[in-house]
Length: 121
Image (tube, rainbow, N blue to C red; front, side):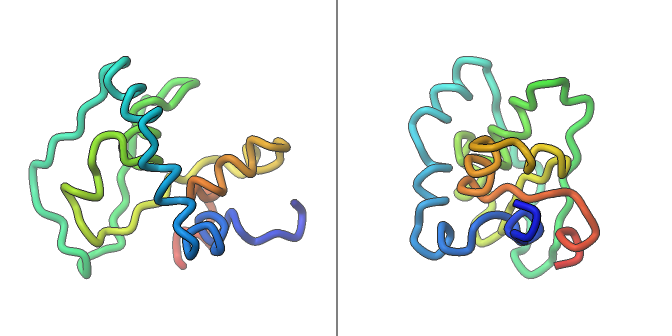
């Protein structure tokens, strides 16, 4: 984990290429969680795909970031349908990428670390 650059790239490239990230983000488990908490995403303005990069900030998010995870870390609230062709990566503190297994779970979902390399890529 010390040498792996996947957190700076927004997840594992092979998972994006093979469609694993898309399938994990679109899982019915996330849709159930978004209905349970309840979390909704309202589109108030169009986001042109070529107009980014866009930065969405969620604060306060608490210890469990249910809202940002539902909107930007999964497709539970239909982000990809409301904003087609706008790539999105949920970013978190680099410390979460040092926790075994949780790190892989985050990377398979296309999450990345908040640092200069990730934000300017």
